[in-house]
Image (cartoon, rainbow, N blue to C red):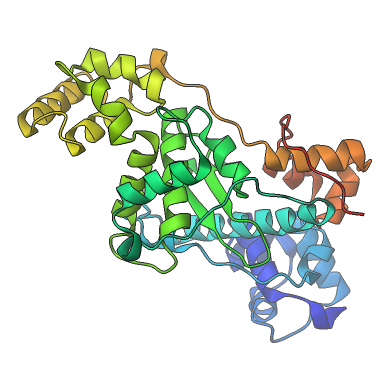
Length: 354
């Protein structure tokens, strides 16, 4: 058993608890020297050491003997200017990402996901600008003209798994993970307002469709894609006709389900307002405090993912798992299971693999 011990998973478990090696040594009674050698694969753990470390971290010992390859943070997080996050915060994010992926991979063994929509790969240089690619996606999916009512639903129908997480302290809005043996997983910060969640999801979809390798302009391109996907120029232009005001932006927000700021950016980009009008409206937004927080009475309802919730429901209701059964199957503690996987109702139809 010790030959299959993974030092990488010990590191992931430690970072998931936001502990240094010194902190784990203090909580477990195992010396930092031994912990360092264990994480680097220089020694094998004794049963006593395993039990101490597992108990301190609240991870079952089986967790450290899985053959999953540890995944680093995706390129969209690494290249994002806003992700000026400290080393410990990034380690915490990477640890949670790996634990979630390991759980999802095991949960998927019991179901068959059948994408209803095609998710094409369209390189920006070969297929024109992000605006054109966003329009191609809408046409490929047969999205009706006008606002997209349930973006999460469209993305999940294209075979992606959308996951809500608590990344508020990490200054990360969302990111996508692409692993060969799994559906694409898009992780969103659940603490964001609904309009920002939708824009972030559209932004991440842009990365999935357009970006196979890192590029300096990829964030700007994903933002342009998101804006065009949610607010096609040919559909929204007439909404900007006449005099555009803060009050008009407020009335358009619940229609298009994007922020007032996103609407204002879009109006300027498609030439519906002049530079002077744009500057004036931004000044008005700033004077009323709307550049930081938009009026709470305009808050939208959050679009909830359903695929992962339905997979969990299937395990509990159709396969007869208890919380403790599922925790054992996922090599997890029951506490982590409840923290990472709320059980919302689902609408997707899945079937058990025979």
